[in-house]
Length: 296
Ligand code: G1P
Image (cartoon, protein in one colour):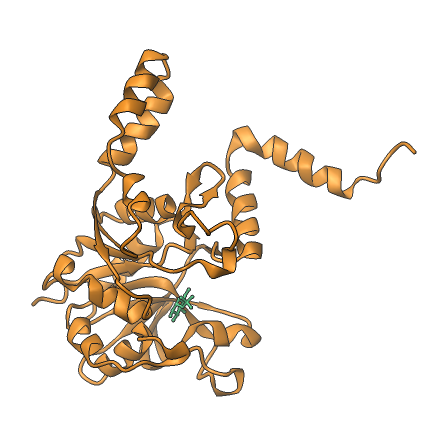
């Protein structure tokens, strides 16, 4: 296995219960919640494609066929749009089919992120691959995964994406201990999943993007349950660190956490403001909140 082989596959764990977004996620998988004009999952798949990765493996729970269907052909809808003379909508629907080669593997039980990655083992094969957590939506140029692949090309092991977070938020993330080795690049010396604030080795949090070498799978096979009683990817990487260097690169861009109500709202405002057709409506809506009420 060559660690600097081309990364062709991105694994997208999407089997979470979405409890932080209930009741919206009672019937709809959370990665299909709409952010302005497209579901959350589409932002992640588009990022991967823009980074040159066109093979997408979704890891979903066994009952979920909806998520993959967002990327499969819809002949009846397409015929209807054609008949109604809606070429732009037709193009947008068809573009989703051609975007990437999307397949699905199942995670039978929600046993954690490390377990979700392990479920993708056969689909990924013996080659380096990326992992993208769809809740973490990243607006960056070049795309976050592209930034990481550029670092990966010069490394002999995994690359993680990190961002500094407020000290009191470290217990929500995987946190690395690291020493800087270049402009925005770190060599990881330790990692810990969701440490207590007092125990965190730094404020550098892993944020939803990984480029991994396939030896992570063997490591995850023997990773025991950790934080939250789940098999954690961070713990697997900690084990891998004994035999392989791991690097991290600092995000150059904006990360939006669409996995909770407040973050979802901020992400909505962020992407709406970028669309000329919506920016005026958004400004009107915000202005109406700050203007004193008139009339009696
Ligand atoms: C997961 C990872 C964690 C990482 C985070 C980024 O946690 O386990 O290491 O920092 O994603 O969003 P989760 O948010 O699934 O609890």
